[in-house]
Amino acid sequence: MKAEKLRVFECMFNPSTVAVIGASNYDGFSQALMSTKLRDNLFLVNPKRKELHGRRCYASILDIEGPIDYVVIAVPALLVPGVLTECVEKGVETVHIFTAGFSETGVAEGKALEDEVKDIARGKARLIGPNCMGICCPKSGLTFIPDASTETGPVGVISQSGTFAEQFLSIGKLRNVRFSKVISYGNAIDLDCPDFLEYLTHDPETEVIALYMEGTKNGNRLRAAMTQAAKLKPVLALKGGVTEHGSRAASSHTGSLAGSPEIWSSLFRQAGVVQVEDFEELLDAALALSCISLPSGKGTAIITNSGGFSVLETDLCIRAGLEVPQFTKETTAELRKMVPLAGTSINNPLDAWPIYYNVSGTKGTLADAIKVLSHDKNIHSIVLHFDEVGYLRRVLGAALEDFLKELIGIMVDGCRYARDEMGKTVMTCVALDAYSEDEEDRRYHLLAKKAFEDGHFPVYPSLGASIKALANLYRYSAQRDKP
Image 1 (cartoon, rainbow, N blue to C red):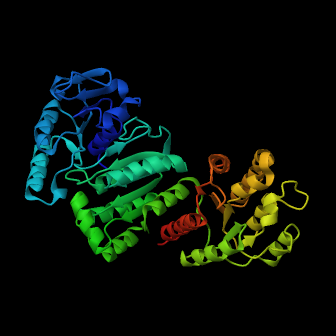
Image 2 (image 1 turned 120 degrees about the vertical axis):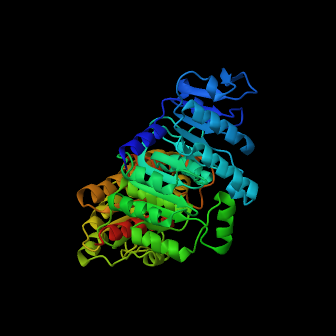
Image 3 (image 1 turned 90 degrees about the vertical axis):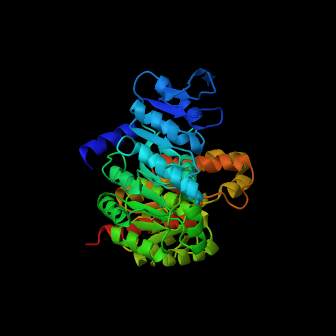
């Protein structure tokens, strides 16, 4: 990225001053920014208001003294050209147009209005949008939703959809995903996905890139940007509009021409990008890539407490391109020393429910079993499934909390050994079981989840999600190693 363009982008993501034009009690942007470190350098513009949120409201951006780095326009579509003209006169470098009502409407008036906006800004200001949420950068305080996490992290998101960008921030906060930058770019009449992709490729704060797109204006440029990015860091992509009806919806959403799914799949494959099928898979894969090492092979061990689940998840592993190999004779012999014979299986998956409840160490704990598996030459990854909170509460009653804390400590200890000492990839599934119906169960569930998160393990709500995420780790590893 050229030096001048890099300077513009650095200012875009780290503005010193921000103005919201069309600020109101309902615009969302001013409320969100009021709670960040930018609040003292936030200016509100609305000619119909003298004051808003306890501070002065300006009639025009031209009335504000001093330079403004970043502007959010949230006024009706027909007013955008006049407001943008004032922004250009003010010397604003970056303008985010939240307003919808342009080419995505499919009507000639909307397209003409969009062309007018483009002409006003050409060569004078960089535009994000219209019809989008803009930028969230936890480090600088720039955001478009209230209560966004202020913790920075390694995941960068580029989303054509505003809702997807919001969901990444909201659900990511609950799932322990931390972000460097989250971008919603909408109709992309100026800055498009390749522009932001080029920036995140060279951004030292971004280690994993997640993309959601519905179409592109320049396929060759997008392919070049994705190829360059995938050489340096993991790139995940979710393509919207892969069916005839989805393509029609994409056109009405952001004015995009979606193209055939085969062409897009080929494009991603050639660029070295890992394509996923839905939002949850995109978030799950980003979580995994942001906090654990890649598997050295396909061999997967599943530790569960249910024979039925183990059969289904074995099938899922195979369909996802992983393997569930038999344990070596040495591994089986060591497991037999600690796992009772009745009602268990020391095959792979390991159905060893009794040792979930043994914390004394006299016959072997879950940590011991994990350590044994981590020495097996056929095993490259371990998936641990824990969903016993509700059941244990009903069995142990008031004694549950102390028991659960000890059991969680044992599980985390075993997982750390497998990861740190033996170099295995470890995925954890901490699920609410079928008996978990009240807030007390959920409190204990969160206790277990947080313990694994504090140990820097990715935590998933289901075995299926953890296995899909593991498969995407392996897919990325295999693609990265191709000549």
